[in-house]
Image (cartoon, rainbow, N blue to C red; front, side):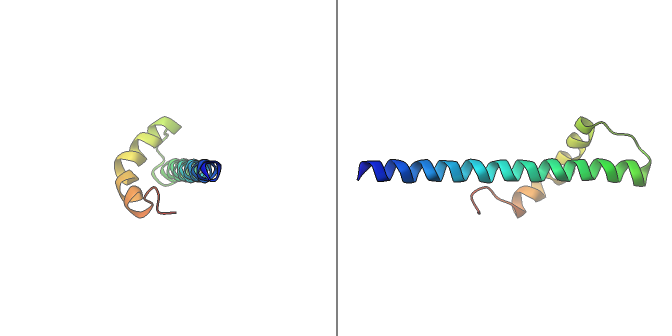
Length: 72
């Protein structure tokens, strides 16, 4: 029985890690989209890091509310 419990826990950890990875990939995509939008619409050049800083300040809180970890 103990092996099944360990296997279930391991599967749960893997699922959590996959959900976290998918969430980070989604945020990275949104940051890249934000950067492209600022460059195109505002004609303002941003590095990816600058875009990430701006996106985090403007949208990270709302994103976290709409996409909570563990809501899978």
